[in-house]
Image 1 (spheres, rainbow, N blue to C red):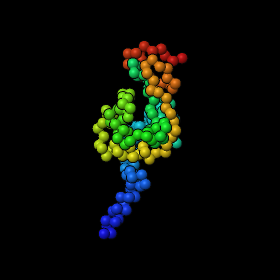
Image 2: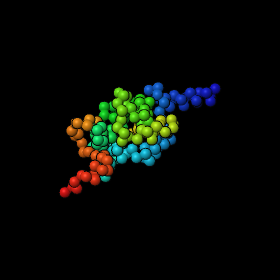
Image 3: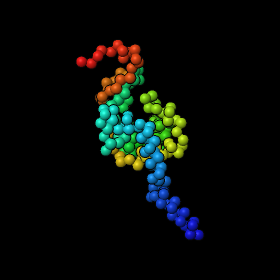
Image 4: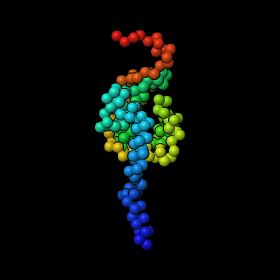
Length: 174
């Protein structure tokens, strides 16, 4: 009887008041490790693409967009659990679908700069660990502009992705 009661109390502690299982420290640590080696901070942390990452707002969204000819300009969005500007209203499955299939809850396809094809090979445990880590972050209120269509004027700094042949013909900067 005592063992059953202990198991019930442990399960209740994991579920918390919300009735949703919370991640343990090991799962969060695994998620942080995967996000780190995956280079997620490079495109999703303010300042990272400019050489000065602001880790006080880690994964809070970039101020730099990638221009892809014919597609538009795409900035790395806020991955923190902020409910207005981040992933705070997304379910675990929606976050995993964005990471591994390149689709948002609204059905928008993510830009091909997001490596969802590579991330589609994550194990279920690893995908859930990344979600647990993202949900453990402090919420950062940072509305990232865009995405911008190919004929829109972006309101961000822009990295341009062009074919090598086009790059070779570009004028040198002053």
